Image: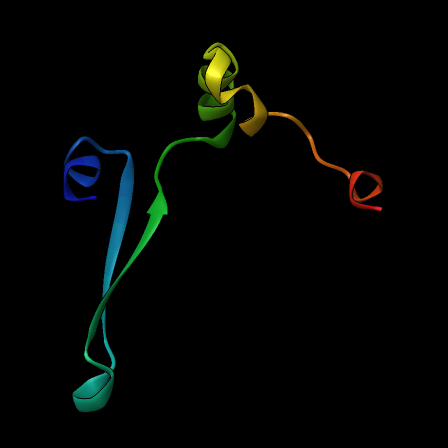
Length: 59
């Protein structure tokens, strides 16, 4: 995760929840989701990640 942060793909926020909660890192994607989607659709083995899912598929 730290390598992705250094390359600019992730934003990280450190949260300290005090004595009992400890320190946590919250990550979020720092790249536009459409750019990621366009890149993934060209990789055949990741094709299922970019397919739109509807509720009808689960019934």
